[in-house]
Image 1 (cartoon, one colour):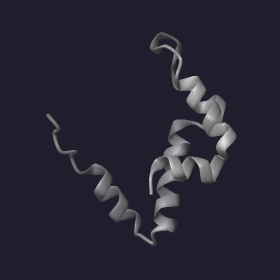
Image 2 (cartoon, rainbow, N blue to C red):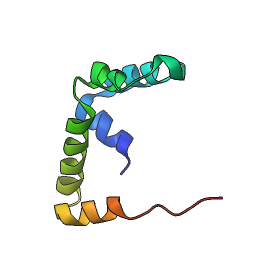
Image 3 (cartoon, helix red, strand yellow):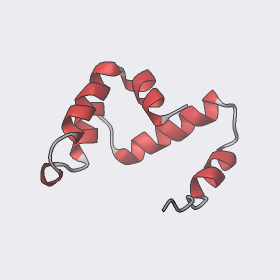
Length: 77
């Protein structure tokens, strides 16, 4: 499952479209507020909701998810 599936399932397609529109602005006009405006939540709260969603969706232990997320990403050249 991808993060976008979580967003649509949790917040609905209309809010995800709004987020996409806000994030499509030029870099100098963007900040974290677009996420808060579109989804009515902070990025910290969003992270917690996403991790809980993953835990429940895949019947995983929180430690398994945290371990996966803290592994370094492979370098792509």
